[in-house]
Image 1 (tube, rainbow, N blue to C red):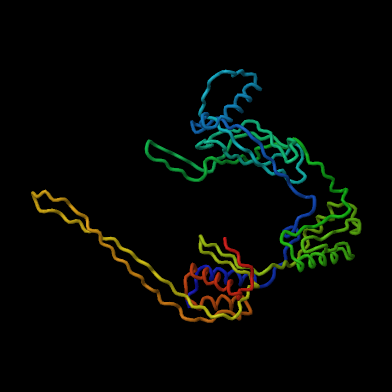
Image 2 (image 1 turned 90 degrees about the vertical axis):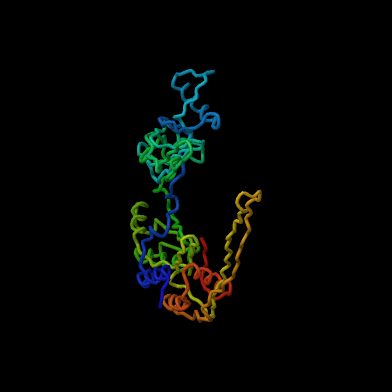
Length: 367
């Protein structure tokens, strides 16, 4: 029996995860209050090799450059300067939880004008603001661009995205987020994928580890832990013990298909009711073969092009009615679909039709 590549991958993955694997709580949930913050800034990149912004198309670049030079004591009021080695950029970063003053974080740099490349550029000191408008970090450094571009008089080639770059450890934290973890008497654990069964198992695992009822499930996405009832004086020590506890997560049955790459991924709990499927297709073919008719030699006639077209429709033989479904396991579902003997692309269309018929008992996600 011929097995499509995507379904063969599904069967292989299922064979590896057939037995539920315990997962640490830290990999399933987040602790309330233990989170990062997004930062953004507007800055200037210098040192580009003629690939910067065109000042005529990006006047904001000239404005920020004038302001920067004036802060450095250089008066450029009324001067006409048109450098091509500067570019205006947005700088973004994520301030980790409990980041302290003086620590360094990574930043991403993206051009906002018509610069062709940021390769070889250097970001000038740029303050990074949070949602509250306060400055929490300052970024500066050489940019590592992830692409390349070259052009001539009549041709241009671009590989990757040269107008976006990265500065490893390019920002220094200047302000700390005020948050006292030790002041929390109750900590809520937020599941990344809310589920009643997973939350209940998490509650049971925590209560078993401390041998007392310290955790309580509030909803499918939240488990509250009473830190005082754990008998551990430090909130950080209690969370450090909780995050390494293991539980077996439960997930909704899902089928995810990617039409661009022709990938099909199925969860272990996918079930298909008994259905009959027939698959076939039509191929429409049109061929153009124009014929040029030449006049006789030394005559005053003109060449004439006579159009010739040939159209045909071919019907591909279908697979006939094949029974699919009533599978009690993923292997039986895959075997039933493989019985159709079609390509992976056609398999995606068949799964869509089975889902529309109400026989696919899973969340059907198309990317």
